[in-house]
Length: 99
Image 1 (tube, one colour):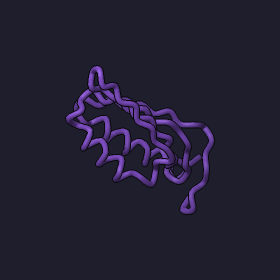
Image 2 (cartoon, one colour; image 1 turned 90 degrees about the horizontal axis):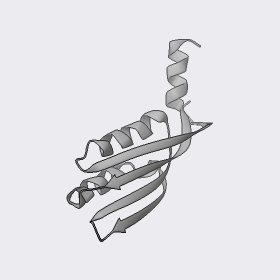
Image 3 (spheres, rainbow, N blue to C red; image 1 turned 135 degrees about the vertical axis):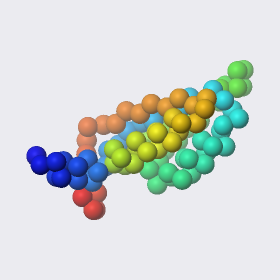
């Protein structure tokens, strides 16, 4: 497949997946929520589980977007101190209107 077509395919196909966020620093939760709010169109579901004993929390997201969009979301979150983020995407691809 030519490079131009391959790039379009990666950018134009949506994937469904899961993103797990571990919050070790409660001071940064406002920044996490700001990023999630900015990327709300990618989020299909969200659950948050706080641990009051040690002040940590886990946030689970069901996401749907292109590799590029989900990568941008996890990159922004991963750059926040005290935040660890991992994603797993399905192999199932869904063509976007632009793709």
